[in-house]
Amino acid sequence: MAAMSFLSVIERYHEHESVIHELLDSILLGLSDATLFQNGLSDKVFSELAKSYPFVQLLYLLDQDGVQISDNILVLNQKVNREKYGLNTDRSHRPYFTGLIHQQDKRYITSPYLSNTGAGLCISASRRLINSVGDTEIVVIDINLTQLIEFMMGDSARRKMMPIFKGVYSVIVLGLFVLVSVLMWTVIKDIYVLFSQPAKNDPLLPFGIIIFLTLALAIFDLGKTILEEEVLMHKDIFRHSSTRRTITRFISTILIAISIEALLTMFKASLGEKQYLQPAIMMMLAVVGLLVGLGIYVYLGAKAEQLLTQNQQHRYNKTSG
Image (cartoon, rainbow, N blue to C red; front, side, top):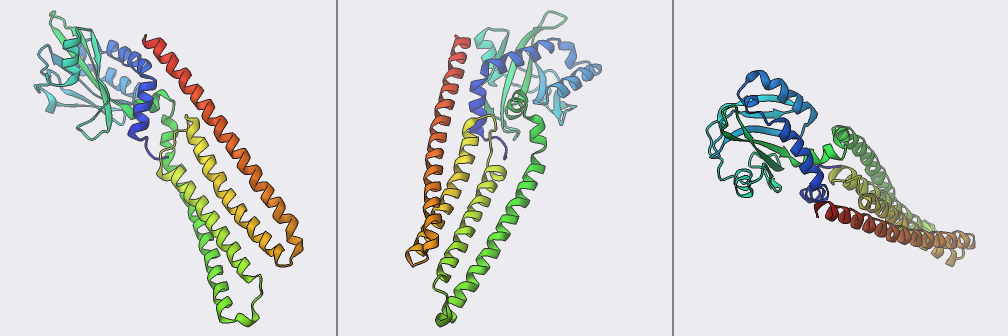
């Protein structure tokens, strides 16, 4: 549940580009009054905007030559601050100005780019407006693209709970690793007995050591999977591939553990312990069943996601066309 990767953000942006542009159009339309940027009493409007659209980072006004003629309206943690350091800055080389001029349209939205303020991926939207004396001015808003995607996917509340989720998963993983340490300590003691008292050893003692090692390996792999999937890596819960990846890794861990246990049980049966023959066969059949089921699940899941992606692409092409 780490932060969304740049790749995930870009993919989501292209999937919902038309909807994102409509949303930004509505915001720009609500800011199509130049007096909002000169009148301090209008900060209430910006405060309401910050509460309704937490992905908005920065707003300012340009003249028709691309020079900033207003303070920077900075939005941080849904609070609005006016900063004068951007006033009179020449922004005529920026893509949201040059694109708007060359496009000869009322508004222009840039492609995603890396913010020079360290805020990650962002996009900027600009719109022409006419002030009270008839001069052309340009309103510009900077958008945090990651927060915008989370807002559109309805994922903002879950993201706020992420530290708690990570903490719980970390405690669970720590408990699993402690259990692995206990199993490894048991293995070390059994290996010491195996070499220090060879005459008194049970012939099945090596198999017991392997069983403990196998359990330690399976538990460690399970803890590692949970740590990677739920704490270290970003997991897009809206994509079937993320869930499929987690289930595949979890089932693979179980398959390896059961396969080794079945093999060891078969060895015990071959050494004369006939009572282990039937359990060994049943475990082998369980391994085959899990493997076949996993193969069917992965295949059908991949086909379903492929059809879903094609359907979304078809709708996007139809909308953009």
